[in-house]
Image 1 (spheres, rainbow, N blue to C red):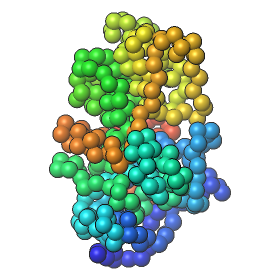
Image 2: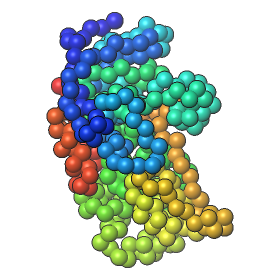
Image 3: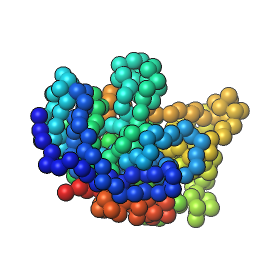
Image 4: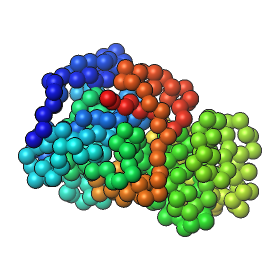
Length: 354
């Protein structure tokens, strides 16, 4: 089913030999029986993509080299594999998808934890161990793909299929009640969506960041208070005062170890939660006595499987939650990475394909 009018495409590929991006011409892949071939409409940049260029000890593994980067995108089906799940999609369907492939999708870990821990041990991640989405066409696993609901625009919705699912579950998994206080730590690409989800769930929100433009975005998304934790020396005491003793949950979307070190001071003692979402280069350091004596709890969020993708996307459609997306050409991806590294990005940055 379906046809593609050419045999090669442009792809932004990371090459570990020189630690740089290269705009290459590569073959357009053919879908296997369990896959659909998608013409990418929008691919957006996530901080995890940038970690390819950095030394890290958090388990980020490069597979093929060079590899097309990018792991959040939306697009339109142009061809399907012959399998029963793939054949449920049809040419012209606007879809979103997640990046885990070659896992079973059926074991306990795939269904309840994360595809990364699939019992087969064969999981690969598109954008890292296999080609990702900063290219014109991509084959994705039909089991991790969904047709976009009404109200979700294929040209702008790419960030929902990593940042959105991650932010939604990072907020929801705190299990707060309406009216309780939540700190969104890091109000950029993930956090500006986290603020929207938190407000839609009825929480009172404090936005924290070191970039004023990110804090401005947080206010635009509905944050009740915002603080620059770099320029306001009294931000911790102000948060504790506003919240009457500390936030009920602090959801950390940043890759800053210092931001994690700062979180316990603003969490309500005895009942508060630190939700770990962002991944710093260095391992986190937690005070064992704090945890043992119940000063606060620590939790992670299952932030992206085919089983929890749909609730996040449907909630986004129902509550009109949209990413702030600044668009660029594929050739400008190095510029996007430079902007992200300089902390000058507001919302999410993405490539929109013609």
